[in-house]
Image 1 (cartoon, rainbow, N blue to C red):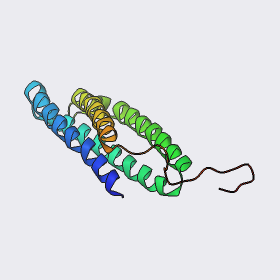
Image 2: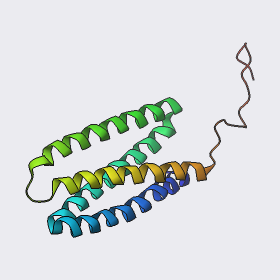
Image 3: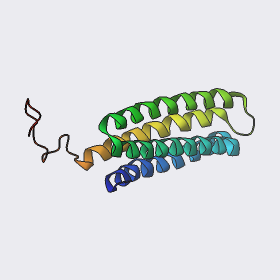
Length: 141
């Protein structure tokens, strides 16, 4: 991973963990230990999924910009589908509170997305390579 990717990961992960801890506390107050466990599972799953997504996109960015965009979209779709499956699977579980899991997943996903957007804005990455020349009609620079 490049330094920008690590800063982006920190910028999204740290607020998500803090928000996740708050959700766990609220779930513990509302639903007790099972609520706290459900919220903790939701927080951990969101952090793991999105961290893996950043790593995949970081790796794909070294291949090509098109591959990076493809990896970003596919990893997003896969994450959403897996979270939907997990929400459905954990709907009737008795080990932890499924509603706390669901709320933690939703709140942590929003926190991660906001942190990631903030991180992108702070990186000030260039959209174009200023050192790349323009290609003429004959293929020369």
